[in-house]
Image (cartoon, rainbow, N blue to C red; front, side, top):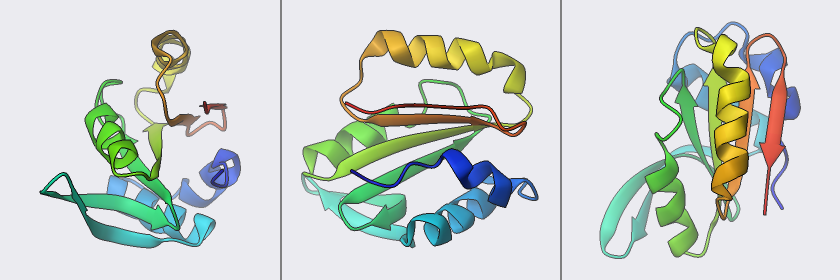
Length: 123
């Protein structure tokens, strides 16, 4: 299984956009940024790829954002990780966690709050 992203928040505290977070995540997991993948005849741009682990990064996004991309990566035989970073939405941390726990998604979900709270669930 891919390396967890629990300690990532230490490296992204200076970030104010998804690109910066993805750059730091790529270094953290030893991956590459913005990798074009072909899935079922469609071309998709993955935020970070490290071996068979593919990371979709979202910053202060709605909790449902990124689920479709993660499902596509899984269909391609890769191990998807959905990474939601909460900065301005840190007060919603527990809600995000509760939602993802209840959904029982077939891929890893990581929720990071910029205050250091972290939650992960992998099948």
